[in-house]
Length: 169
Image (cartoon, rainbow, N blue to C red):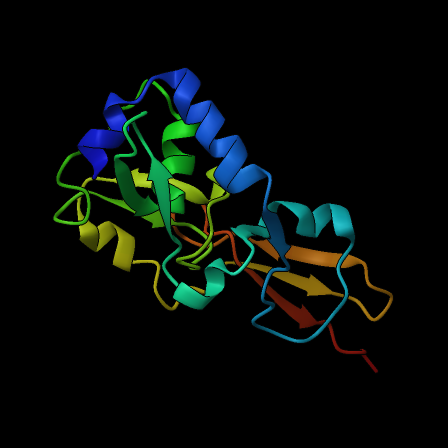
């Protein structure tokens, strides 16, 4: 699967990305793991996931791509195509999933937003993010950010956790 993706030209990758992912993009709001507080849209934008219509039903984001003119088909994950599109000079390992994997910094397997994807050489680096709350925003009752703490991972997880700063008497 990954080796076939590597064989596609940059032009074909761009075409497929446009047809399969960009044209059908659905933006998914970040899941706030803490108190429900409306953060400014500019703060939330980088945390929003990208998916494709109806792709959440198959949870992993599997898509089909017509590779050749003879109708040969490649089944791959939407995020593999997105990663290759965003990183055309990087060889996607042919052993993807058996050691190396694409890590979702947002924790959502269906997400294909390139800034949420990172190639890791060992699966343990991917699973190390499970349970992370991401970046914590402590917010005042007026909606202003009083403090922000980034998660310990590098790059930082693309998750949001908000906590309301209680009134002081």
